[in-house]
Image (tube, rainbow, N blue to C red; front, side):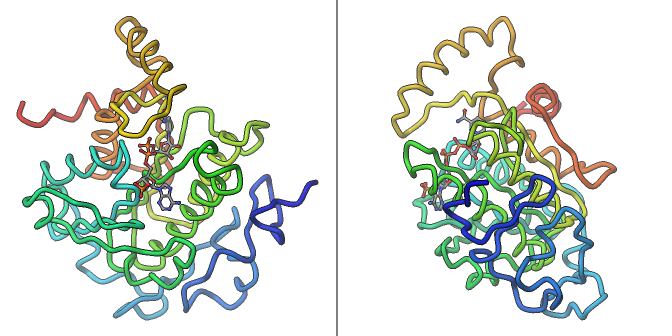
Length: 297
Ligand SMILES: NC(=O)c1ccc[n+]([C@@H]2O[C@H](COP(=O)([O-])OP(=O)(O)OC[C@H]3O[C@@H](n4cnc5c(N)ncnc54)[C@H](OP(=O)(O)O)[C@@H]3O)[C@@H](O)[C@H]2O)c1
């Protein structure tokens, strides 16, 4: 097998690439997991989470255990809030007052409107040294991840780094910080065995995030996103024009508006239901998004 250019010492277990080098463990993770992060193995059994007031074996602080819509003292973070989906997700979260505290974790500070700026906290991190930013991931009940780049923009190696390694490490830090529900925006067709890099990486990151051991892990697999993308992606624009028209006949078949994805992301944390891992395919995203009353209705 050709060595992974990003993870020269990566090993493969059950189709999952387990990075050795780049992912840093937060302090307190069990000693046997050093070298290969145990939480990134499929068979991972969650250790007790490190963190303030959380001695080994104890549950996260009471504030983190509260639940229910309308804030209820709950806290969440969003990765990728500057992107097409993340931006709409942030709007949904604020409009619905779903969380008392919303933290945006990103590589740059965003200019937000006055109201939004007052309602969120922004933490700028260096994703190449994410282990040094463990504090940003501390004390959140829910983590939303809309992070991603493209091969055209970042090259194959950069794409793997962002869409798999950054996401997996963020999930690891979130779990260590007390996060109970991680919501990952993946993609239709995600498959760790795929011969297409995009779908393979999406499949790998899904496995890595599931293996972390959150109480709830929701993976959304949207088809082509319908949005007015700020950056120029000509091929995606052509697909959107065509699929936007097709969506009038088959609304859930080949595409999904980012608004629908964002609503489904919020809905799934307000009512997480039974089961640790839930995978929402495109149709299920539409159903969940539609079930959520639209703002102002
Ligand atoms: N496009 C589609 O049709 C489609 C379909 C299915 C699934 N998806 C997946 O859905 C997810 C969200 O897609 P989207 O189109 O809403 O995202 P997007 O608009 O491309 O935004 C991506 C986000 O990731 C951040 N990001 C990108 N490269 C980064 C880097 N090197 N370091 C730190 N942050 C970085 C961006 O931050 P900056 O603003 O700072 O760049 C932005 O916040 C992605 O994982 C994508 O693969 C997309």
